[in-house]
Amino acid sequence: MQQTRRPRPFRPPSGRTSTRRALPALAAAALAAAVLLTGCAGQERVCGSGRYPVKAVGNTDGQDCAADGQEPPEGYVRYPAGMVPEYVGDRWDRHWATVVVDAEGHPTHG
Image (tube, rainbow, N blue to C red; front, side):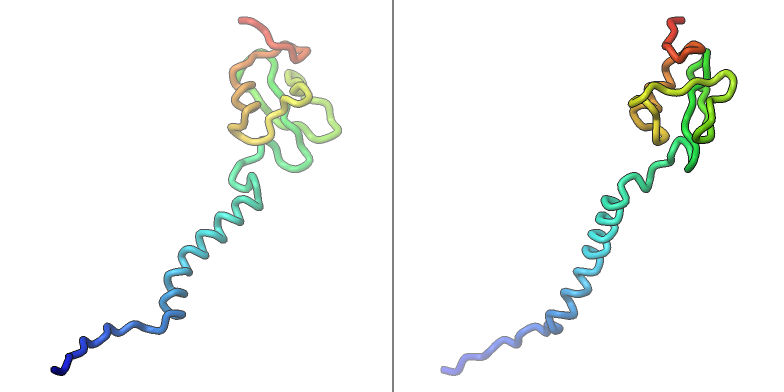
């Protein structure tokens, strides 16, 4: 008795198909690596280069930037060392948005 063979389905060469499938994965991996390597690339700095942030006296929402090497302008104080906001929305930016300071930079009550 003679057996009949079923024809095999056509499959393109594996290298071509694998490349097409791998391209989106490679692109996603490259994007993820770029984000990780640049760190805070997606975050906006509180102040630009050559400037530092200062806190307004007497209210919660006052913030400005002063030139490096200059004292804060009238009505503003420096943030305490180690508590300076660097990026919009970072820990210290959120903290100081809820605190009122006096002319010496000390938190006030009321």
